[in-house]
Amino acid sequence: MKILYIGSGFVGACSASVTADSGFETLVYDIDAQKIEKLSSGDRDVVQSCLFEEGLGDLLIRNKERIQFTTDYQKVEVFLDDCDAVFMCLPTPEIGETGESDLSYYFNAAKKLAGSLKKRNGEGQNKYIVIINKSTVPVDMVDQTQEIFDAAGVQNYGVVSNPEFLVEGKAIEGSLRPDRVVVGTWNEKDFQIMRQIYQRFYTSSTVKYLEVNPKEAAAAKLLANFVLFNKLAVCFDVIGRTCETFSNLQFENLRKILTSDQRIGSWGMYDSLYAGGSCFIKDARSLSHQLQTAGQNAPLVNETYLANRRQLELFLGRAEKDAGFVWSGKTVTLLGLAFKQDTNDTRNSPSIDIANFLLEKNVKQINCFDPVAMEMFKNDFPESEKIKYFTDEKNVIGNAEVIIFATDWPQFRSLAGDLQSLTTRPLIMDGRRIISGDYVDLQNNGFNIIAVGSPFIKGAE
Ligand SMILES: NC(=O)c1ccc[n+]([C@@H]2O[C@H](COP(=O)([O-])OP(=O)(O)OC[C@H]3O[C@@H](n4cnc5c(N)ncnc54)[C@H](O)[C@@H]3O)[C@@H](O)[C@H]2O)c1
Image (cartoon, rainbow, N blue to C red):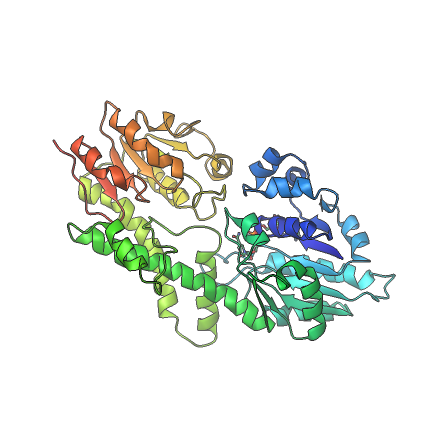
């Protein structure tokens, strides 16, 4: 089979590399020339500098005979002549603060594709082709996609909804060994083609291969993300808040008790300053917008979104409220810039809001460190008088009056010892409870600590 990908981001690049690994000739098209150059480099480190996903570089190198990346649309048109399937992996961000999904990237790509599909096989359009939507989209997107292709006069095609459930940071592992594959279409012919593409999963005893209609598939993705987002919000807005409010409630002890109940489960039961990333927020907003447009209220969906925003504001506000800390003129260490560990993705990272908050508070300097996300963060916050980047986590903690742990990178756990040996006593703000095992020692050594899931910890005099 010959398979085309349109969009080479986290989803497109990871999924395409697995498609090539399944033995198919794969072409990946994107309009971002820099990204395409890096992904085609054949160098694991260069690939990782673009998309930091464990195993992506190796998979691309291993399958280099079968996968090509391009910005050249002519190459796409030639490929389409004999192509079996096109995966659409375009961004679908929120339009401003409306909740509505911005489908313009998708529609632009689809309209261009429709023009080319019409011309295939010398305009004969003899070869059947499926258009597979992997982006997270509104429930009725299948109808809208079909309208575009019909209006352009495309024939001999099917539309499939195949939402992506990968987890950033574990995308390759998740794409090679997914827990489920969801395929939504209206007709058997398309199901058959999808079974061929996903042969390795269709016949696997460990993968749930689920065939539904395209609206169910699209809805399932939005709903799955909402359930996960809501669980994170419950963890920090209810469980963590309870532990912050009453003395002698250790968050970790409550987590142990709660997660022993299989119905509750352990995923997401870590307290945090914010649930960031490119998906949960915009997908909850989109779900709410769709429900409200259809005449429903969506109070729980909306409240989950608000709880997340509130969490970061409350956390940052505690410096003044609990510790009487005055931000103006201070030097701040910001540890972690990615929205979570194991990724260089900074989309909706709490550190973006934190850096903006600190600049508004007129701090003297923000000293930043992240093991892999500094280049991405520099797109929003270039190095300047006020923003400095450091080469490792140990260097960045000196000279600060406050140290904020924003990302749950495991290597930050070992920083407690380095903090103890500082001659100064900066305020510690632990937005991930990453050094929770050391709070007592640090307190005894005179550190004031503000941590999600704990009341204010006042350092010994
Ligand atoms: N990132 C995730 O963890 C994840 C997981 C599941 C689903 N999704 C969904 O998958 C979709 C893609 O997400 P992503 O994280 O890969 O996005 P991304 O922003 O990382 O990648 C999208 C790519 O599309 C390219 N693009 C934009 N317009 C184009 C055009 N006209 N032609 C060709 N390429 C074009 C961009 O240059 C970019 O490289 C979104 O709908 C997202 O919600 C993302």
